[in-house]
Length: 468
Ligand SMILES: [Cu+2]
Image (cartoon, rainbow, N blue to C red):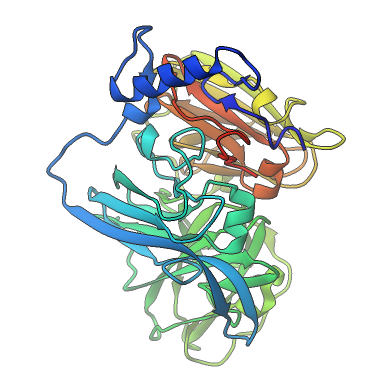
């Protein structure tokens, strides 16, 4: 497990510094760079990249991480790690454009804790990555995150210190950014969040082991925000009513059509917003065979007939192209090919694992093309921090429906996708599989901007182990 626990790694240049004589000097220089904004070599510290002052409305939250004995509603007791005493932690609801200020306190988690804002393009210093953008917050310590919630949608948050351990112990929650103006595609009058997670051995939705009831009258339109905060792909179907996919990963789709008998596969870390109209029979049910006791009952009529089968939803031809589509027509400045697979003992990208994978190095303003292939070892939901990418093609077939913008792409064995991204958020960013167990086994790399450095270090020396 050497790869998971290097002595000391600088994620800005991936050198394993353990035992290097000039290490102390370099660390001091880097820490100094955090206070000056640029050091003498013209390097800019990630720690100095913050949200600019603005007159945006401020929304403040306090979140305390602590060990908690949770009693579930099925009678089971779980030794959990919680945010504000529950798992999931509080649903944070803000308005588009708000300045979100969250103070994280660590009561008693010995390994330290952070919060990563999954899907939000925050400034580098606010991304919550232990050993890259900050040190893990020790017991008794605190860290205040500040960012602008610029893009409305369904997001979530989780610890990115020992993420595979801490997320499954319960350190996660939903983050909803309400739009200033409701999109025309959304006529809903009711909305509900359904966050699915694996807490120890229990599958839960919104912390319940018994499913979810969403009130709704006949004919009413419900916006359902589905969040997969577990490690495995979940497939959902909707019984009793046709439905639409309004948004993926927080980004609205254009002219989404009605679906019936269609299975929605949601990869780990992904979000789907569905629009479901309460039928004449007054109840629709959202059901996942992976979590049979966790169905979502919408409305209050008789239980609809469950229909087996159906075809898998594909975003390749769903919805309509935008009339004035800002489609990326420029030649990419950088092209990266990532093969997600496994070696004998590890999960790998291009045959290497964790800090041994060469980073994708870019500079601000670059147009980036990324080809991602899944060569096996399970589903790999590929997540990029700090950016939203556009999916151009799957298996060589260009998308012909709505444009699709994601932060997490579900890939299945044998699939290849082409993604387009603009380098518009200078920093040091992780790009990893969001089956966090795979990330902890090495399927985690960096997207580094030229000229950005960090005073923080990953490894056993600092105790910052973002993906363990
Ligand atoms: Cu994976």
